[in-house]
Length: 300
Image 1 (cartoon, one colour):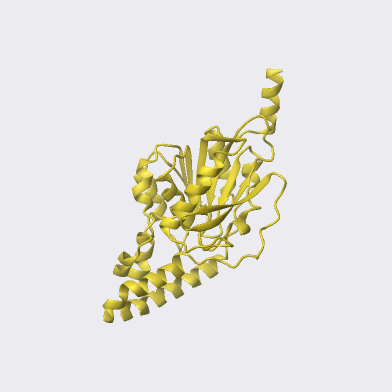
Image 2 (tube, rainbow, N blue to C red):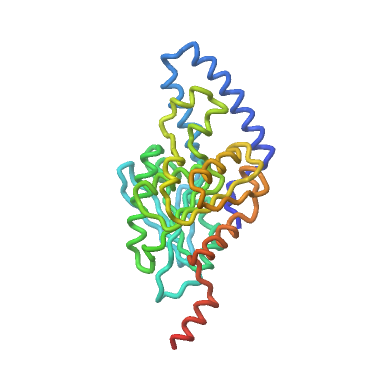
């Protein structure tokens, strides 16, 4: 099952061309008005990097094995959802997957997408970014890192969670959030889906030298080489928003990682989550109902 933050390929292509044309006009303006460049780029950066979508005024309805909390962070109060496994025995602790969504999503919009993981014995943590959804504050690389740290620290202390088996899963902007969190907290496995090597590298084709004014760089290339854990990189081979070379750069930075080329663009790849589940199963993070039953029968 794939997280549905996917528009059509045509819309992605059209949007990319519009941003590119707009960036050329912006570049010409800023070349003449160089003193205003940092301020304008900062405003543009906030709009393009952190375009939070509208969400309902109240939290989503959750199933009985989910928990909703609010946590205070340096950047403001955020909403957090912990989804417990749907097949896991209550006597065993479950591995935890910290999932960070893309920039046009919110945890409300993805909360019902994780059956593939939960049915395989994996708990899922969703921590909202500041300024997204009903969480207060302003999104930035630092604020997002702080929010994820707070959620991580809370989640690993919850009953039924195995703090020695924590997985980081980031899609698009979420890949930057996971790598930012990895600077501060330990992961035992990493999955990066359709993400960038850095925001600066992603901006260069459209903004040229003005990309160096970006302050929220999310430099994943600095982090990935230091992650000595199983790592899976998933990326569409026809991604126009974040071209495939980003995945290749990340893989080159950590040659022990596993790189899987997906058929599709930035928003229309299929069978993504099953590939991630297979990766987690191969590294002993998943637990099936059958395996649990067999283990319990042997013990008894």
